[in-house]
Length: 316
Length: 254
Image (cartoon, rainbow over all chains, first blue to last red):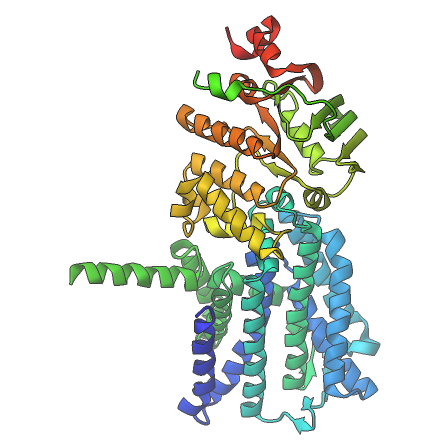
């Protein structure tokens, strides 16, 4: 029962390509939304559940992507090994960073993560010899899963959706575990959490690393899917957008974060037709959601639907 | 006051009692400001001890220093034969000191049940014990059993205090630290909470009770400490403190 929503969602995304065969929009935008879901769900563990902000999450996304790109193009590593190496490296960096950075709170933590994101971006641009600099790295080989080379939009949709479901499932289980309760305790009151016997420093470090791993995983897939990476995909704007997805969907709700990621991806696509006015409408919509649905789209709308249902039943 | 007769039966310390907590020369500061100055105190296993004092006397800081939430500047804390000075809070909790924080601090967006589960964070492998102790908490506070699915943030102040105490009990305390359990509660509720404190003590939980409500606290405690501007000004059996002229004038208001 606990995972009923998950199975429903899984069935829905599996049916999409059947319902809309050969539909570019569904398959390509769907894959892009799927990557965003992995990123947002991971960031939500840190932001929504543990209550710690990160304005530099694109850095971890980029680390995964560049690890795969560099190891496969320059060193000829198999793609899965490169992906694993990217996860290990990103996890290690996140772990080293977590202890000093997570002692900070609120605005200070925001500033520190922001600085980290900028540093990583600068390295991507400046370390030309490794990263190809502003031009990026092209010619990344396709993802090879035990002999199956992932090619074409439909195959990529399948792989990314599977990865997204794995991420969702992991997040849902994590949240409902002892660790998840500890994180929510840290969010509620760090003192009270400590008085429950939670090692808050350790709990925050763990969730920071897990969150970074989600991002690096999405980054590796992204690099192979696009066959090209450049620093533009991992700059501050992307970090802010990831935070927006989490807040937009509804914090401290895994489906909320997923919902926010999908909504924002669709919004970008839908607004392309307005060209110059895209950013304007984008910003106005975000403001409207925050004013009228402060708990986020997912939580706000599902509560609204519940209220409507109750009213309708009372009237009939 | 309702705290008279049956509750004031403070047994005299039995010979050969085990000292559970011994604090010697404890000091702690906020930057250059010294909040606790050379405090000495001890608690025997099974005792109910009260620390009373006015606003800003350092009561909360003292408790926070004992449970590791606030750093020790100097001094020594010995608990159950171990030197726990400068231990991190989660280790101190694991050793058996559980604190009910001032102002309850329940986890508002979580249900009553989840709050209790979090209380058992260190105990979660001993499921049978957790289930039994949870039932015990629900017997102590039947209202919590009725509202086990309700979000803790929607409980009244008194119910939140009950939940905070219940949550601490699930940490399997050998020493329970209570910080101002009467704060902001109606007199009837204060009485109810204090009766539970006495009951818990009767079941063998050692309790250190910190209170501004000196009369209520000293009425149920065996011994008391008076804390004034970070120093232990006086210590005596609670009954003596209640009868002391200075204490009466300063803290009991008559």
